[in-house]
Image (tube, rainbow, N blue to C red; front, side, top):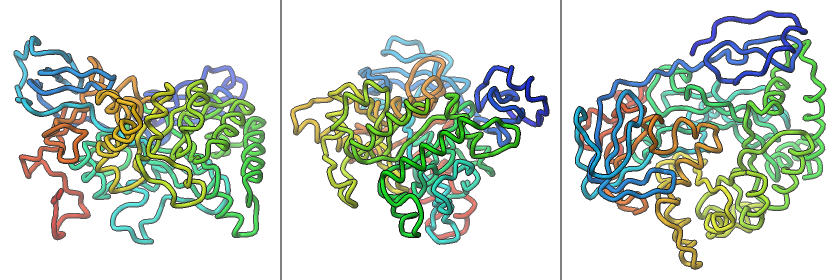
Length: 455
């Protein structure tokens, strides 16, 4: 899907062209700007690793779409899921793997990660996640900070079964920049990891972070009303942008207004999330997901009606005032309200245990009297995450034609004792706990103590 051409066209001709996908496979041109340009100058060069036709048989299957199949069969070949069903499916022509007593899920997806932008080891030289030099930096792209050698990628794969993840800029700014969606595979460049066909995301932040960072410098915003004033004026300026002179920030904002780039808004308080949804309506864009949304349980109906997901922790709250009113039952109450629930990490260690985080949120609901089926809880770390990232048509559930991103767990994935035994990405076996040669090691780790040790 490499795009090499740099389109030069007249303003009138460009404006007449229909908008295309930001991450499409072919050269795209701006529908709204007077000057046409290449919307995808850093295209994905991802190529799936080789795999074999594989049949997982005898396991309990959670398909990610809310279904549970006992003694199930999952078939995949040529990178795609072929069929999912019971033991009656023919496995002729496939390598059979006995999953008796084990569980199968789609690959786990983390919607909120900073791997590569804040890699391990955590030292100042590696701190590339916040361009905290202006309240609005829509012009920066997270992928330009991603270090593919971050050992955190392989830990997320081996310990967490994570096959896709979204790398977001940090939350110092009201507008932090573009996100990048990656396949969790070893690659020399970030482009070799970029999820083919995934739309870009756009990181925004409300609340304490922006007003603290810039208020402490004696500049706007220093209050929540300042946050909104800066945001609204920035959106108005973007709407008035005529594209005659290229402006990287406004190109991103135009992409949001055109529906090509998905908004991921860091926001904790329910009242503030409600205001952001109104601001989005005023300016003409859609919020895809609120992240860290500890108070979503207060507005589950509003979130459902506006089609906005909540990306949340199971029990991380109280570390600052806007996180003070979080409750353990947040996810369960959102589920009860019919709103979209996503469990996220925002952490290099937490990404290795998203299955356990989902289980904790489920348990909190059960103590409240809300008995949420296991198969629905798996959706919180698979298909719902994919939906909010705009890739649910390609991954997130075990359905024919989707990418064969699959995890075989050695026990119930909602048990603290269970671990990924095998992980496939696009049908290629990328991790096997029973085979040390399948334990990925980054260049940075070569020659280091504990090399390839997944603990």
